[in-house]
Image 1 (cartoon, helix red, strand yellow):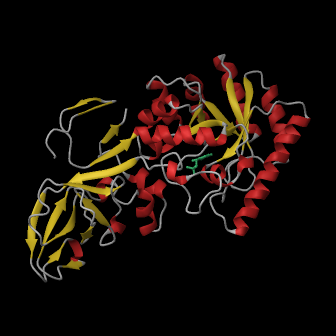
Image 2 (image 1 turned 30 degrees about the horizontal axis):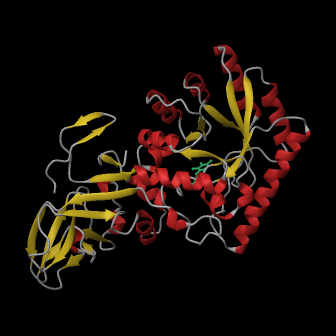
Length: 390
Ligand SMILES: *Cc1c(COP(=O)(O)O)cnc(C)c1O
């Protein structure tokens, strides 16, 4: 049970572990990646931003590369540096625009970048020249996401500017889809418009005699619903972490995709609560009958949303009947109604909050009106990650 949980992690040997931990099934990740690579036949860029959606950037990056990922994508320069410090030498693409003061570090970490305007391209060229280095640039074209990107009309001139930069190379052309995970008619028409605009821009770049490099557009929605968004590389994130879109896909068999993360803990205290007694802050739950209530050492301070108070049930041991969390979730603890059968459950029993034998993070997300990305990203550094299948 709780006894000897010893794990070797990137930070060294941990002598003991708290009950609450996130189990990351690395073997599932590898299967997910191999399957999506087979389906798309394209190069694969594995997004490992936000500490690999909360799963741990280095172990995920290593496993992804071992299963055939070609690129890694990060959101901050620091995330790129973390990969390099971890001895990862695969291409790392920075998805967001940094401050000018960060460009030197981008060069030092040999990262590739998205660029979409003249000023930034000039800044990249000047810094690269000063360092005697070259930077691989992917022209980011905004076809409807409204975040970062030049207009399709500006794309040929900017591609030319990047190509002409003595210390720059046009490594790719990319866009990002805003609504590709929805099969609503309006969203499908919008995605179609985005893909047409992107294809047009890439053709115009080619018509100038410029090699567009790696052409990439597909996030999870693109991979699952739009074969013609795959181009030379795909960038699905949440799909590879195990959470396909809600609608069934004609291209991807969701039965082959498994969620990686399980949030586990152990019951650390059990007591009898009499009918009419309340549990936790604000007295939002009162026992309808005599029952036994267990305390779990996990709360919103670990990233378990307080919105789940009285809204979620957990798996105790391997019992098939889920048990409800009762009362408000506290910062460090929450309570579970174990029922009145003393023989069944007790102190130290293992509890799964999501994933594994319990409903996964996508189901939890649906319960509180958010997305699985936010559920896994929010599990914070107080929760040790245990890597299974490495
Ligand atoms: C995060 C991100 C992705 C991956 O998106 P998913 O929805 O997780 O598939 C792809 N491309 C860009 C530019 C991103 O920022």
